Length: 283
Image 1 (tube, rainbow, N blue to C red):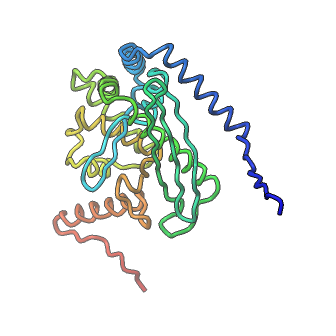
Image 2 (cartoon, rainbow, N blue to C red):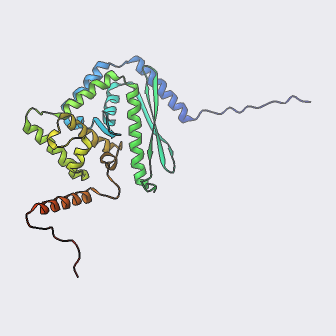
Image 3 (cartoon, rainbow, N blue to C red):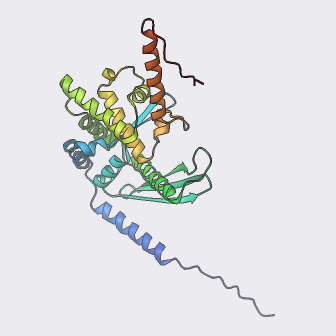
């Protein structure tokens, strides 16, 4: 009986995988040869956000959650930090699109320290009625999830000592010069008008969201929160309905109309010897 020879088939490494490994090896070698200057990276980011208020505005986010305010450095600040920090490789991809949710995955790899973090972010792709989003809305949701996953990965790799300093600088730049009451009033009006013009968010909704009673209570901390909340809405961290507790069946314009009607009715009742006009139909 002849000896049987077992043939083991060796699976070749794909060209793409081999190229990826080669790229990482080269990147690690380069990182070891040219290590980062952390202090210079911090100084560069601070200089960038401090001299450009519009950039600084994009660097914070704020989310109302269960009666609490969750705030921190935004997706945009993460990108700035990653680019200046150096020797950092960041990748993000969609790993699953289900019937109700999609999952984004991001990896931040510090080539210099050989430390990597992978994060996942899930986002719902159905509305409150259970209907699946259109293709365009799914793409928008996917892009937002990718950005948020990347932010989370970057800020888990970059030391907190770096992010804290640049985040504080961005906050200071956002507020601007509020040295006089006139400047504070102007800044406050710009924000309120912006919310109303962009998302039809009323003054009452903003006050409720901030947990205050009058516009005059909007000071420096509230200004930072409003700007951060606007970024969170734009970046897909939250929605207008979630941020301001809107009922799907009741639009802000309908709510305002009802409030105005109630105020008008109350004013009519206060007039002496005058009854409110009857709303009942006449035959």
